[in-house]
Length: 427
Image (cartoon, rainbow, N blue to C red):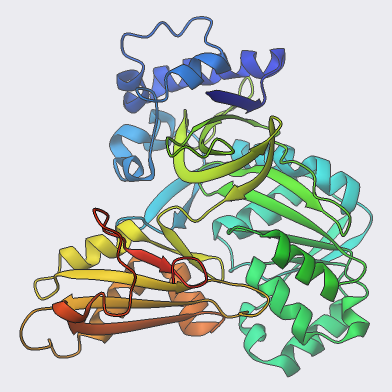
């Protein structure tokens, strides 16, 4: 069973057809994917029926010559290139045009106009530009000409409470833009004189559980939370608003989102496929149809209530460590045979998420192998390097053990080989 949400009205369908015509005109990848399919009159429901043939995955993004449209490859328009962590141990790079900036503005306009278009002062703790989160936040506010001030905070100040407080006392922010872990930790750190001014907390990048949302709002008595669901490839696909009394469903302003049964018997959780819809005359960096990002949506009565961002990935203060990324590093290493990850997720009781990565060897232990694996992970995934190594909001421990000790103390399930064990759920 499939559910289609987002821009499915008449104007959205017209823009979908424009988007497809531009993709077929400019992009080899989509000409191949739509081969044998009549593109005339395509509907969102057609996208739902075509997910097995017409789709794109994070792995496809490395095929730049096929995936990037010719107006980017030539180049015929100005574009910035944003770097995003790779799922296979290599960084992906995504082009971002002026039209992407305008589109991102439209994606976030409803909550900006309602909550932040009144002279707000935003303290942004996202990584420095041109990170995708920073580009989206800065670019969308600028595109909308919102009546707000955007302060890009040196994220290193999170390590120095004195510097942090002096800066925030000078700014007197009314809003925070940050990772989920940062918001919670700031609630534990900041004095009431600063926290009482905070009216809006914008977070994203990882699953926001009801428990953590309640804990965060309990620390900021006057705030609401804007929970964004996004990716570098599609910007801010959806958002919901969380207050002390309720959480809205997710709204999808500029994308068509197909939700399909995950095949595991849990009907309330559906696989997410994203189609990026351009408006007539626009040229955005990447055309996307049925982008399978690997996330799950929790659906109740046809409404998306939460986005679960934990499939084959663990989150270290918002920076993601992908299962495929670790597989690529370990299995390509001449001295390593296997691995498991033991994950201590973020929670009110555990404000500093942790991963213990056990890597297995045979025979004598390779000298310096823990440091080597850590450097390979940091080389492939700069957000992990920053959040773990520099900000110290999370912890990554590398343990090299003989193969026979790899699964010591871990539960076993006959017929199934697990890689990620979650403390509190699987342990």
